[in-house]
Length: 220
Image (cartoon, rainbow, N blue to C red; front, side):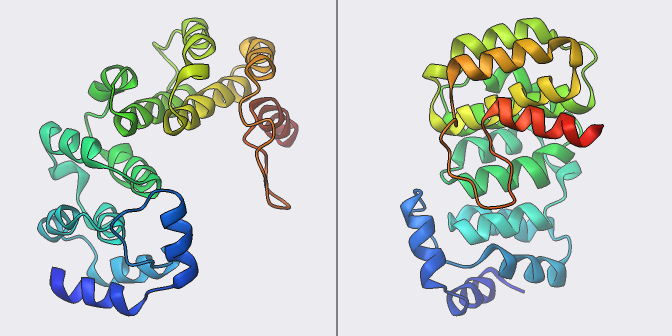
C-alpha cells in the first residue's frame, strides 16, 4: 500500500464521534478514525519501515498511529527517535509511540533522564513513561526514594500531559515496592491529582492511592 492509498482508506473510515472526541483533546490534523480500525490495516501491511516514516511525516494522527505499528524500532537511530518524540502533538500519538516504538528501541535508556526534564511536554511524557517502566520491571539502579522526592516536588506544576506518566511512576512505586508504598500513598493523597477523575464502570481510577490499593489487593 502507498501513503496515498492509506490516507484514502482513512478518509473512508471517518467517524464523526471519534473526530469530535479527538478534536476536543487537541487533534489538529486527523480523519477521525476509530483506533480499532487502524490495527487491521497494520496487520495487513505488517512491518514496513520506509512506509512508516512516510506516514509519520504526513502529520495525520491516524498515519502516525499506524506508523508506530509497522515501524521496526531496531532499525531506528537515536536521532530519528528523538525527532519523532519532539514532533508529537496529540496524546494518542504519544501513547502509541511510547508503547509500540520507544519501548522496543534497543537503547531507550539514553532518553529517560534527558527527556524527563525536557521543555517539550511530549518528550517529557515519554521520559516519565520510560521511568514508569523501569520502576515496574527493571528497578535496579533506580533511586526510588529520590524519584518520590522528585514526583512530590515537580508533579503539581507539571503540564497535564506530563503529569499522567509521572503519576504512573508514582503508582508503580506503590504497587511494586512495598517498602515505599506508604510514602507513595501519602504523596498521592497530598497532591490529590486525579482524585475526581471520571472513571467508567469497571475501570480503576488513576488517582494514585486508589490505583495502588486496588492493584495490591489483586496481588493477594
